[in-house]
Image 1: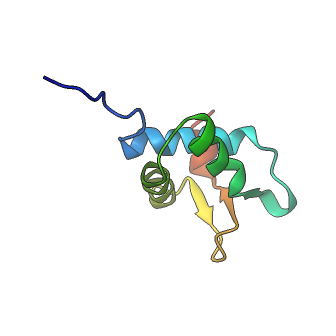
Image 2: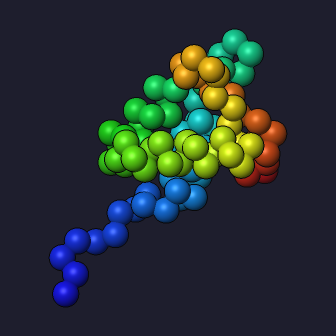
Length: 87
């Protein structure tokens, strides 16, 4: 008997794609910067993702070359492979 349903973003691939959708929806500012709160806020509060799902999705998006995280952690940049997801 299963009492708990599977989490929507338990798969890091699905979480990474959702983060990319949020990044695409935000208009980048100076040098293509997308402030990190513009992707983590909607993911955590609107999509009801957990912090673990968020960090796994972000890590996967960075590993796949979709996003580049600044060393300060305050913003990301969408790279060409990430932009190609929506082409």
